[in-house]
Length: 415
Ligand code: ATP
Ligand code: MG
Image 1 (cartoon, rainbow, N blue to C red):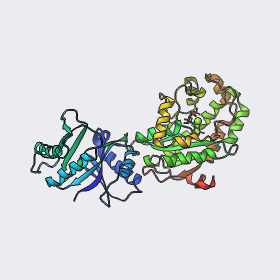
Image 2 (image 1 turned 90 degrees about the vertical axis):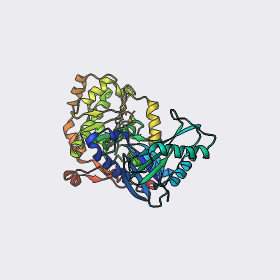
Image 3 (image 1 turned 45 degrees about the horizontal axis):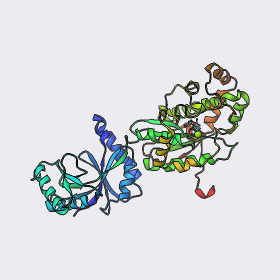
Image 4 (image 1 turned 135 degrees about the vertical axis):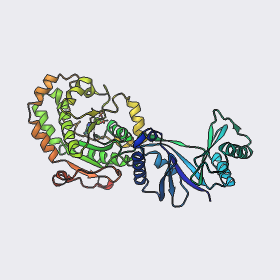
């Protein structure tokens, strides 16, 4: 009986030598979570691939699409699983090639991972190739540069047959690269930056600074929507929200107007660093891109960065806005980021922000208000909400739970 399943290819994991089992196990765990809405029977390792089988033995395009969004997945094929009977896998090959879309040339690539199978792979190539030539007389064989390759893979008493595969997001399974805190606004850039480090295997803990109580809480809702939108990639376990409005007002009264933003940013980074320490995260991530706006000149980045010792990663530093927007569309955050909401950065904006801050002036202003007490207070009043999309996220034990109030779960119609 021929069944339909998804074959998952994962190039990069193959390169990781001894870590391979850890990476594969994490990918299996992450796939189980990401595919919770499907009726999955089994996810197993088979000869350098993962096979995802559904209870109805009829894996769908939707299932393949969901798998493709999981970091660590290089390619996904909808494959037929048959027995060792040649008639069965020849029929599956005809079926698979018929589904491969528009093309002119093809070849068959037979492989045997179980060498006790009676036919040699060259014989299998000939057998399947002849049947395909007969079934598709208008298609030509091209063994060097075929448009379509029909794979017939004998492994562990089964034959897997497929002709097409679609690219996944690539990268590494979330949970294999440690934890990071990401600074998340509801703009275009930081959701993409978060997704990018998540795709490289980092478990992400976003922190959002809202203008509350001086602004409405719209940006907080948008950030929650962004986290929900990122669910198919499974990279966020918890979102922190820091109501920053009052403290911004204090800063704006204490420091020269032109360097207010730099002061806000230094406080934000210090709060993020404190949360990172509580979380056991080893780096902070921002969505900055060089020269994109006034605050993202090298001088200003340096003046802000000076406030923390933890590494600050900027995955978008060399990206153009168009590239970022395209990625935002792909990962499903674009429409959310299009909605404007005042956040802490639009609050008390100076008319002419400094574009080339001098460190001495910045440090002088920094000493003109009690930033230590401010950071302490902000950390003590942080709010958070947990999300179930990320199996590698482990909440910190102890202090946080006692001192931190959970964000009320929001539902769409309360807006
Ligand atoms: P984004 O599109 O991510 O909002 P941006 O182009 O608006 O970025 P800035 O406003 O200079 O640029 O912000 C630079 C980075 O600082 C953001 O990418 C984000 O990482 C962080 N950041 C800005 N505002 C906030 C906020 N309210 N809460 C948390 N992080 C923020
Ligand atoms: Mg912004």
